[in-house]
Image 1: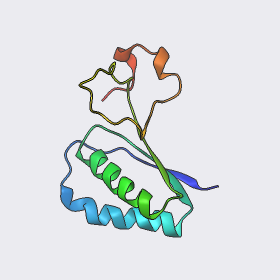
Image 2: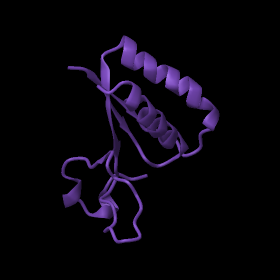
Image 3: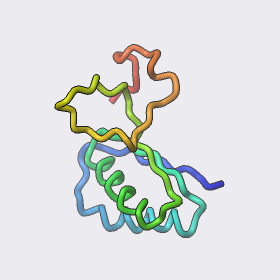
Image 4: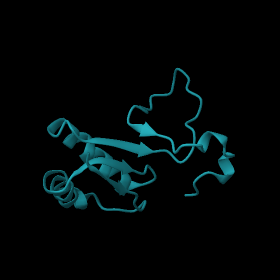
Length: 104
């Protein structure tokens, strides 16, 4: 069994960190027993982490990642094109009023 690693970043982040981030993630996967990653969804850093993990999941099929949602997603309709397949909700969040869920 491996180890989990979390990434929750800031909204403002230059895309120039992507190569270094990829390097760090590969090191965690190859040289440490990290095989599960949790990432936020609120800004550029989180988006970069998510995109790199998505790429690396095809190279390292044993790793998993989940984007942690801070609230229940909106009710889906035919115009909703969001892909929630790599997301998760913290246990019990469905019983919390949205105003008191994880604050941004």
